[in-house]
Length: 466
Image (cartoon, rainbow, N blue to C red; front, side, top):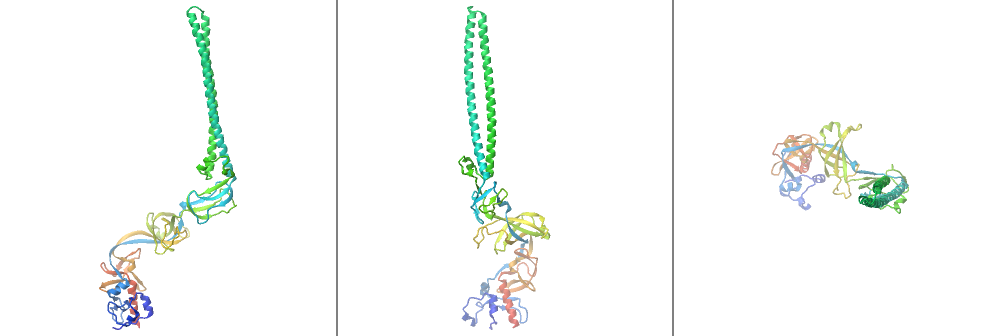
């Protein structure tokens, strides 16, 4: 059998010669050992070749795989341009609650900050005044509490003493009255002394009630004044306490504040209320800052937003809750699953596009060890599943061969025999394509290795031209 001419370019195009020693190429190989370039073609000389015959060894070497065409579910999808954006719900803009001078900076651009970590220290006279006010009002509250307690005890003692004295007077007057009454009943004395004794007894009882009532009234008035004063002091204390809590001083530190506290000097520590990456730092040491100065911007990048753009003629195909497949230009071959959580309410006046938002977890990506691989500003694409239909004949998109003169597939028509067949397909949308004509259900379609078969046919055509 005469071997067809094989030039170097053809060998490079095919890319799958059997791994035989070079010395054996001059021999006449058997059918099973023939490389794919030596496959037999089923068309007469001068006609376009559409079939090719291969041995099982050649099929295996080329990695050719087939699937049976048949009914299948066609997924209709819409591909939109997309951009990675920060999750605005997790951004933290750090501002001081008091004016001051930046003494030291403890976190820098790119640092991963945990909740409660120290960001910077500010020397603030406002803080010093607030701490002094808290210490002062706390002392006033303590003094008012002591005064109230002391006055309460003093009045209790005064009332008890008055009761003992007045009760003693009443007891004496009662004994005198009872003695005079007994003498009068025995006719030893006249009625007059008895009546005077009775009058003195009643007078002492009335005097007791009058004095105790007046003393209790004085007590209640005084204690009420002290309670009002204590309440006012406590209000002042709570106000001073809240002022420091607003400045970021924690509860434990507030409880330990006293006249010797370092905070009296105005040393104001700015701490992170929640974690994140330092994406902006706007201060330098020695700089004056006020309550409107943004010191840091922290961003939690554990989740990001994928912002996709749908044009007006595509809007009817998008909705909240749609499944989305996200591909990034920076990470070819990586697909991230997500769900549309927001369809924008305003069309951009310049681009005429509506924004869709997809929130995804910013997990690690194979091949890049950096944390939070989805970086704000990265470009990509979002594929939305907009519907599903059932096709009578469906094949994988990978089986289709696109050429200048049409769309083709390769069919396995018999043992080792493959035929190129022209087909018509519906607009591709997803990984499975609906075939409108050219093949029928039950045909065995090449899904892997179609390019090698196409190259082999192309070499045959070039050989015929020679």
